[in-house]
Length: 190
Image (tube, rainbow, N blue to C red; front, side, top):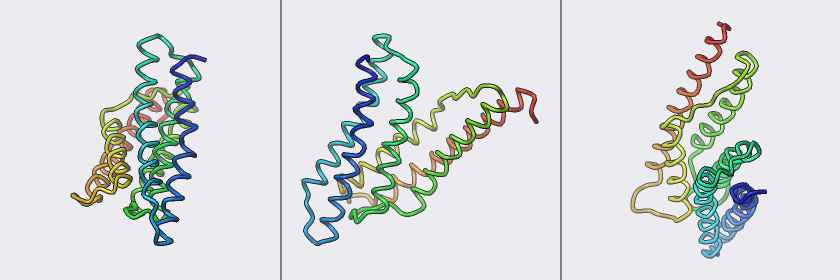
């Protein structure tokens, strides 16, 4: 097992740690005795997991450590981390929780992407996912919105980074949808 894959697996293992810290902090807030060290640890674990995404990709490309398992686990780890953060920060007693529309839209887009990939694979023979800049911007703003909530920043209302994350999530979802339709049509299935 190469270093890039080990970092990806570490990121997956950090997800339940992050979830536990968020839940315990939310409980401490609900009980009226907020344990700020839990919030700081949750932010640190999320930061480490987020940075590890860029690190494992760089290592895999730089040192030719790209493996089939890594290409499957890396995007799975990314999605699981984002979804875990968005869901736990939406449905716990976290002081700056997300509005309900945010997790609904992110989860719907991700589920539609997975379902769409299976449909394209079935009808076109192979699904080719081409990353689009809007998807990268959506991920950037999702990380920003999550960090905003974790760090309890209040100098600008959290709804702004959340709205930007939602906007680019929706735009990238439509772009991936149109790309999937194009692949099915190209395979001769109208």
